[in-house]
Image 1 (spheres, rainbow, N blue to C red):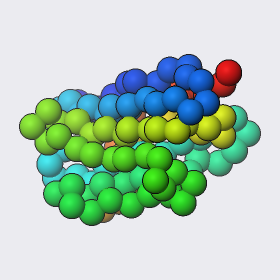
Image 2: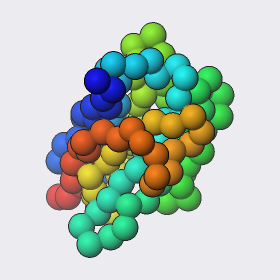
Image 3: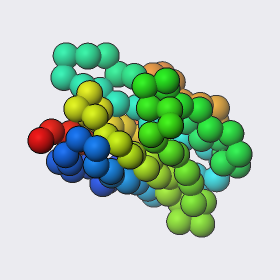
Image 4: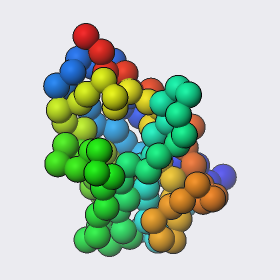
Amino acid sequence: QLQLVESGGDLVQPGGSLRLSCAASGFTLDYYAIGWFRQAPGKEREGVSCISRSGHSKVYANSVKGRFTISRDNAKNTVYLQMNSLKPEDTAVYYCAADYGCPTGESTYWGQGTQVTVSS
């Protein structure tokens, strides 16, 4: 069974950091681009970042550029999202998705999400 599992979400104070992980089971992430998305209560899901299969190409939403860093370790079958200088508006459920190009809302493979709460 093909699965993506996110972890690393937590409650953190503004200005703090978290590292989210997206681990794959049942398939090899090498063949897929991975995207991170988030959805806050009452808001639409938005794309946060995407990393190509090789890891050489990375894309970020303007709202997180300079604060978030996406990376992948294909040997560990895992993609990471390092989040620094967190703001209350980063509060959301974060999801990872896999596809042959940068994932979209129509992509097939999604994780179950991990909650990130930024609050003092």
